[in-house]
Image (cartoon, rainbow over all chains, first blue to last red; front, side, top):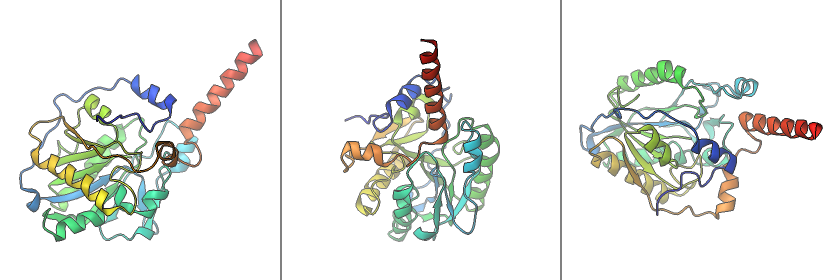
Length: 166
Length: 112
């Protein structure tokens, strides 16, 4: 059964999305996986707008309330050994209850630590990354913050990434 | 962006429609509510099923734009799941749209 991409959206938003013209990447960017999974080092990236409470501020919700067409394009680092109770969430387009109950539904640090321990993957990098997914204009994200994250991942010798949008 | 920087990526999303439109390198489609791309909270087995499917796709995909879909049903009743993922108060942009619609309706009434 094919996935219905609009199943969980309110009707008005689904209609808006269906009519939205977006440019298709040409060519689609491609980096082949160079190693078997058992030797590959992974980083996890989510756009669920989570952060570590006490270590970093949340994403700028007030800025978005002042200008509803703007979303905070910055990122937060999440250490792989983060504890569930340290996770803060500032995505105004989601009910954050479930991801605060179990981080693994958006950022599967515990599942990947298990895959690392059993040898299915090579390793999980020390740092995961969180963006906030509501970005009507992604220019700043594309030109500034995503390259910064790419640099940080290179420093940790990352090969591959699991992306979980929200 | 990340692929151009030399990383291999796999995305798990409930909107493979966008992946097809925009050209995402590797997509694992799931029919799950927003904010729950890897499954139900507390359900380790379900989360692992999704993750292992994504990793297989990453290892096996031979060409850019590969989309696979996972045939796994969301365990919650639809109406409940559709309501549960949404924020308790409307997001700023939805609030703005509601206010604009109300203002337009009031103006139409005033003219009528």
